[in-house]
Image (cartoon, rainbow, N blue to C red; front, side, top):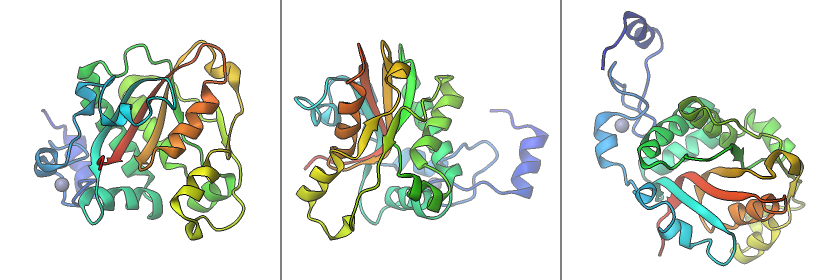
Length: 233
Ligand SMILES: [Zn+2]
């Protein structure tokens, strides 16, 4: 890849770092350094987007057409650090760049063919105000810059959950998340193939709750994308 004088100059002014290991990127590297590109725990789910462990996780719960995550999520790994940084360390740029990187990895597998709209998993207004951005929306922006698919940022709405989520057991959390999302704009998704986007999928409860709202609109087709997914047990 040819590197322009401008990109080399920008690297000098604001050095770019690998989104996974934090090493400085060379002028020819994009988002993820060469070493991480080779060693990251890629799921390869996009090779089989209609039948893979992530898609199967939703069978019987949601009519999912395609599902894929870029990498497996494991605690205390560069992937976990990347997810933590994009959520808690005011780094929307990492979410955007990883969104674009993921899109470019998935495009050769025709993952985005026929998809009309990107829908991010929303945060509550309070959380978004505290954080300053919604990481799922930033991932959508990255996907948009690679694919040109528009974003429906206000299709879903998340209402405030009352009480402390951290004190609850997993099953209670799953039940709590099931009724915090509402379909705010059914017209925007009706008749469309929608790609629901999140940063990390653990139990799948959040995507299930969002998906169940989206399919309330007429004639909606649904696919799922996340940066990371917990490896099935
Ligand atoms: Zn790296």
